[in-house]
Image (cartoon, rainbow, N blue to C red; front, side, top):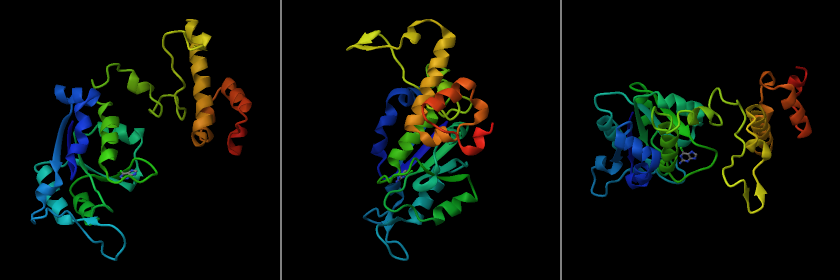
Length: 259
Ligand code: 6GU
């Protein structure tokens, strides 16, 4: 996969040299190219922003600079353009899977109050454009959001994860335990500072282990992600699950109780 990133802070992306993503780049699975936006600013001060029309706080990134940058980087092809912004569509595992299928992504990192909206309008007729948010909080710029997205997408590429099963078992992976987060995990030693590993995990009884893991996933989902628990599909719950949810004083949506 080819991955271009345009930013006024390309040095933000030093972590992409490290770990799984760094190795994927060394192997050629990922071809990451960083670009300094200011290279396409032509005045002496390399200005990339200006005051917003209509007034208001902050600065807006200029369309001409972005236009030249994207024209140059996307020359001869049509990457999928991703614009990180807190007003974008939510980034989730499903979108990560979708982006992992693309041959070429171009990330356009805005700072300040964002990029002049005509840039997204202009490129929408030439390439797929998505404005994407990584969560309900505001970052100072899109750079960290792009790091998040690149790691989430990169680890899904064939051969990037050591264990092919790892990406399949993820919380939120389609086809995994849907709408359940993963439960706790343990390794040796069996007792650490007086804390014991749950006996069932040492029992060698695969059926009991699977049941226990599902119970723990349900407990954790109810505790940490009540909105996911509330959306559980009754078709995916067996008698044991329903009993556990009852013990946790958790009630399914009224329309689901009839089932
Ligand atoms: Cl993608 N960008 C910025 N600046 N803030 C964010 C975000 C993106 N996602 C959540 N907050």
